[in-house]
Length: 124
Image: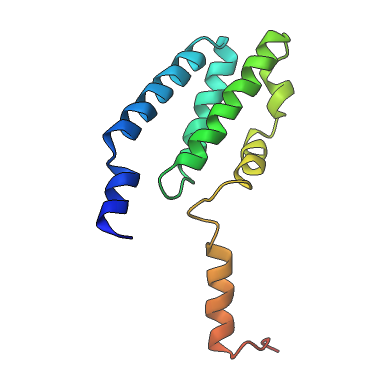
């Protein structure tokens, strides 16, 4: 990546300010959620950030969508667990299937390392 591309992608003041504004708006949306929804959202958010990869834009987009889903559920007077199910970690893992995570490459790397040691053949 050229230095100018790096600055445009990561250190662009306009994009930084837009990102901060957008983030603050979404924080306010989370604060407006009912307490149970807010609690579950914050737990999910912490869980998801442990898996974030790259610049985090995929993760932010996913969390913004989750806020919308929670807002709809709250407006419909659903319990938050009617949205996530009781396996909240499983719910998160399903959501994370659609974004890049830093752990996603681990199984493939393990298999490649072992198979390259044995020339791609199975151990018998």
